[in-house]
Length: 493
Image (cartoon, rainbow, N blue to C red):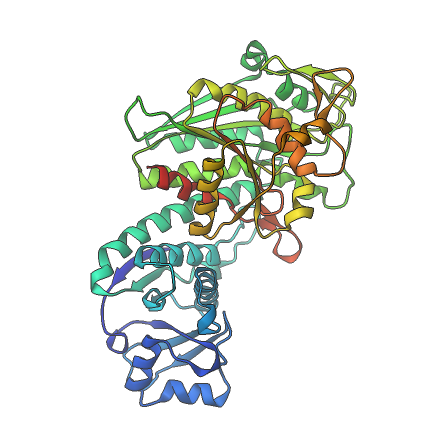
């Protein structure tokens, strides 16, 4: 979709469709008041008729409204004025975009960025409008024999802003489009079936990203991993016929002596659980077990389009976890790249095994900070549901930076404790430690495992098991936490 910004008097704009917001209970926004006056009270009459109540996301499409130059007027509910938040704003934009797309409108002007939302500015409102609009029109149909041509109806959105906000809004549109492109890439990689999106496919996608000339991409093969001593990663891939890949993407936007910020994304392209096999129900959703990797790809795509002055490295360990006569078994003991030994008590706790070697490898970049992103534990879903991502780390300032980025990006996380006491759950009689603890505090003990490999770095861990995809009728990848990660990196630039 194409985006632009403009200024002008709402009632005088000649366009296919003008979109304006209204509050619940008949309260008109300043733009709606202008339109109501120009139409001699028409908007107010619509409210009194009961055709529109102003609930958040409710829409009503009007044709040939008197006194208004636009051919059509789409009114979208914003909810109660006292509940005016960035999240409510994004929902209204999303619903309005869906309504326009479903009605066959090809281009429209949004007056919603003119809203005075507490704690936001023109840059944020424009950026989030673009992100929400692109999210509303995203469709995954690459694997369908017949495409739904209705998805392409809405082609252009213009954001109406105040003249003094024009430059900030243009920057917001640019950054929002880049973030939306990154989210779309992460969604698509997550939605692809595991017979297509293999470790090799991810490696080829990294090379595609590098074609723009802004990235250096290195892909380590199995033989190289063996030389490095990556016994944990190689233990996971033993049951698969797909060769594992360790994908490294480097973006240099700052001076060479500036330490890079490193993201490490879990890339299990299908997780059967291995010998500790999962139940059959919903096992198809284990194609989403590479959404941590997908978020690193999406973040990299957004960053290369925004071009901030920062050095950023993405590391993606990728393989499949399948049962086989050669697969790793419960009670196996393996040696990690760090030299520490691990007793595998459960082969379905494989994400931490590929991550620990990737984290050890990433230490060579001497990162300013390192963040790993993984669909790591069902325990995190039980604890936090699908609203926020779990966040743990060994550096309070880094955790705070990520929490703040999540609030700004409307892609929130919640901090869980990482007390040393939890490490007792990983005790082993036969190795340095085990790969799982008991049922209690599973998301925390998983992070405790990773903490043993990051003692020399500022490190944080995002458990996105509850936020990376949706189940049921809306089944599909969400693209989270790309907005959080991009915001975090922009704040560091």
